[in-house]
View 1 (tube, one colour):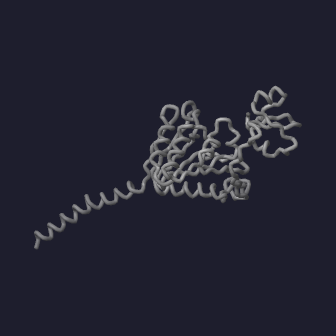
View 2: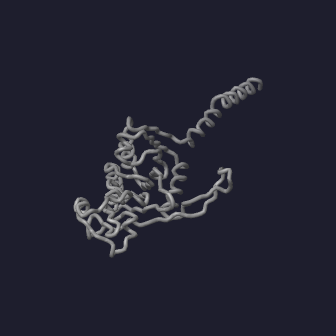
View 3: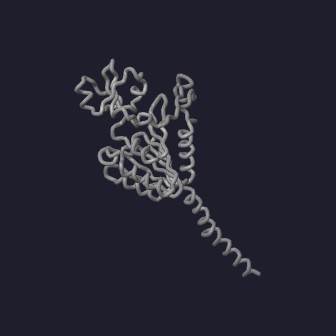
Amino acid sequence: MLMKKISLFFLSFILAAFIIPSIYAQTPTQIAPQIKVLFSPQDNCAQEIVSEIDKAKDYVYVAMYYFTSRPIAQALIRARDRGVDVKVCLDEEQPTYEYSKSRFLENKGINMKLIGGSGIMHNKFCIIDDHITLTGSCNWTVSADLKNDENLLIIESEEIARIYKEQFNKYWNGTYIDTCEYRNESRLEKVPVATGTVLPMPKSSSKGKYVGHKKSKKLHYPYCRWAQKMNSENQIWFKSRQQAIDKGYVPCKVCKP
């Protein structure tokens, strides 16, 4: 009987000392996100982004302020071509930027929406297949990859992906908070006062590549917000930038044609 009690004691000791701690040690590992940290220009951030998109099986959802990278745009098209659900939200000014891939992606059939409001849609994140989140300071541009001091986080976590996906869906559905104000003079507490607006991609024009305002003599891309406000009687269209400049038109400081 004594030997049996001693055996049970040692068995309990082994369970307490080795097996039970190992079970508890696994719990944080299972729920803690796995994070890969990269910095540009020394790390190849664009290549890492393309690699993650190329592994996507179900969906790729992107919210990006500035998007000019052709390799990343092509990765999104490859994903769409193999049946992946690809959605892209960009700031409303993106179609006015000369090197923006907004028009290229639209022409390739990528689902896109422009996010408008009182400020800029300054996010840089991407969610892939409910478990990968790409985020950081890095816009999807050549300058961000080659010149700027940026950071990129590749996070493997279902919980973090869920949070980012919820925010993306607010942009996509037009239910996001656009403007807040401070509750009092302490400026430590905010209250929302307005929701934002989601805009469709403006259509390309067959009239010309540039449009000028006859009275102000300002030249714009057709997608510029100021061009969109022009009355038709004030519009004059040009096939080339030089043609407009020769006639005395000055490039817009917003869209910079």
